[in-house]
Image (tube, rainbow, N blue to C red; front, side, top):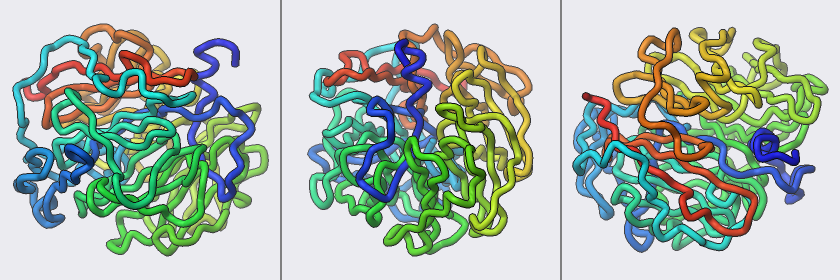
Length: 422
């Protein structure tokens, strides 16, 4: 773990029901953004995207406190981040400003130099139905931007205080103002907001979480999963919306490593990603009985939350060495669709036109044929990115980086103007 590359590969996502941290004090950090954005307005005012009905209809969600949000489609679900994770931005999205310059520009602005810790700036997330970006700063909480990154304002100014190292954001496709945040170390593992980040409440006592998954096939949103950071055979399930959690990790195979990320297909079917950290056996596990038993469906290790694309396919980043794996049968089987040069160990995203985008060895890489072929996109990356997000409201890509020092890097967030319609 001495090199920067080794340190990056060692930082996976997970959670535990106790306050104890995982075995590695260096764990945590950023993971990768999925095809969502998130919350807030100036001074923590919630930029509520409008009614769920308006979002589902693909209409204009209304004038929000921090900017205008045009709802479009539900983006296929949660962050990475759709109804799974990620998903494409709906056709109803209308940009709110001219496309920025087609070059990498620093938009860290007022977050630069902020006191933090290892994994200081953990994620940039793009809200699927609102002109908002969300970032997490370890120990300092969540911040949002409604001006494309020109400035960042604190979220959660009332209610529970979030101090964890953000790991994931899951957006409710039917309720634009509702999302869940997960994180590791420093407090609670899962938080929920129903007012687009103005107020958060902890989801039970679960802590130290690499990810959160929600059963969006259930209108009541009762089933949640949370993976435990750097813990073997630990996976937490809630059947009451996060009020209480049960550890179902013992049903995972012994020696399966850290199985920290997941995708809920329905109330009985989920797939769990195991990275094989510290000698554990990598692979993807699947259950069809709600977590009582699991079957290995792939022997390839994966990392980060999977992307559920708008066509229903699941894309999952390869663990450590990179690559990208795809399922078209709800996780029954996976095939490799990108190698380590085409896709690093970074969560992929989907553009509004259906192209899949991921972080390659030197540039962003895009596939317009469902992973059969890949082409470079945008200029060479200005640094080794920890993740990528895209805002159709701003016509821009956002990448980010972090380190294990105690302040946010001066160039932690970079933006590249790109109009996917051209």
